Image (cartoon, rainbow, N blue to C red; front, top):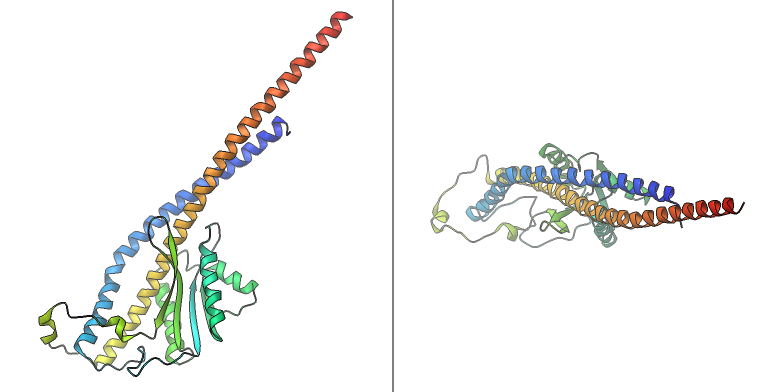
Length: 294
């Protein structure tokens, strides 16, 4: 059994660790709230972009765009580009593990894959496994912004437009609710026309004439470029929210474990002190008795 001094040192160590995990919980809570507010402010703009793409398809049936599958059907892709969003650090439960697990499963399904990684954790993981990375984006995971999303989308679109990749996919984490999140796999390009084709909600709208300048294809291509950047930005913020939520859960669990350890150590400390006091009393009594006999 450890002595009282050793137990006291352990109590101080656990208490100091608990202070750190409590601070990390509060920081993650603040970051999560701010990220949600930012996403709520920008989401209507990107939803409007999606509705405009639908409007074009509802107005002009014969649309030709390299960003869509041809009407004749899908052609199997040869080279895939994967944008994988991870965190810059750990201590977030299974957040990073779930993303990387799905990424490995996707890589095993395709022969030619180009990786574009967001987050230092993902970069180190693939580097350790000696898996080549086409490009990594540092500090983007902790500071998601539309300018960074636009930078990423321009790189991916250049690869797609020059036919260096046939399909662009995105792997990220999305918060389902306040408790759990799910890892999603999304095809960014090319689009399927059926995903943007919806029934006319306004019957009179189909009779309206729209003019597109300089052409409907040019307008559609420009709108889609903004839509891709917006989708990536939304995925970055969603992943950031999921990361902070996972870290809050992990830190909350650590705090509860620390409280249990402190309660157990306090009992052990009191027993050690009681044993030490009893030992001292016994020694004093024995000494007094020996001195009395003398």
